[in-house]
Image 1 (tube, rainbow, N blue to C red):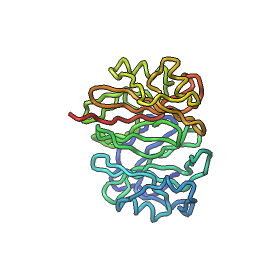
Image 2: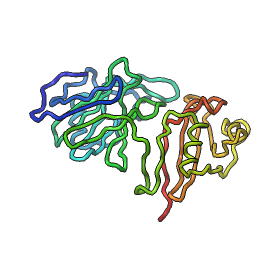
Image 3: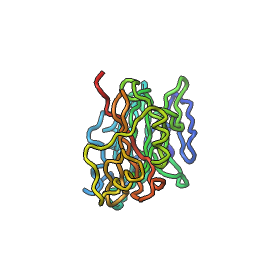
Image 4: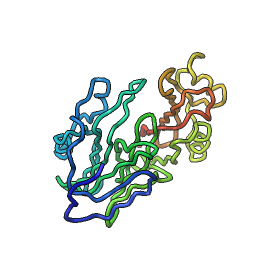
Length: 262
């Protein structure tokens, strides 16, 4: 999407992500659709909205997430969703709006040739925002507020959790057999599940191949599998998609940390 009156103070904007644009923009047009969702995709709508999010929704957009970015408020929104299989929905006309107070100052979006649309945002301990794509994909980049403007850039090599006590290397998109080697090299130790997966669970096959931290795998849909690792800072939960018996065919799409007590 594009077009609108330019904000009175033009920011320096830059995108390092192929197929994604980040431009200075001062007025948000109405959605080309009515902003309604069927029950199948209703879960993709943000549960609660700030005043800025409600402002976007009044223009017919479906707000999917919000997040702080320094002095700015970031809102992600789409015109609609196309239902897919396994309870997944795929965005139409996905955008990221950056607001200064109530005023739009910049907009990020992807071209049709891009690998995937820009999705929701997730706050990072650094104060920046992680930018996701449609499921079951992994994040596509990070949104940073810089001294002279805004930048959409590649994911940093590491991410911190637990007040910076936990450092996790960027293993998004890597097959689990390669990702675990990287994690182990960064002092994350495989954590065997308390309940051993039964033989009908793909996680049991991984365990037989030495990937003892495999906890559970979904038997349908995107084939999500869960793996856990431990460090003094807490437990790292890693999710892959693929659902294949070969570890190399199951790539990391998400991870989070449950922090241990100090």
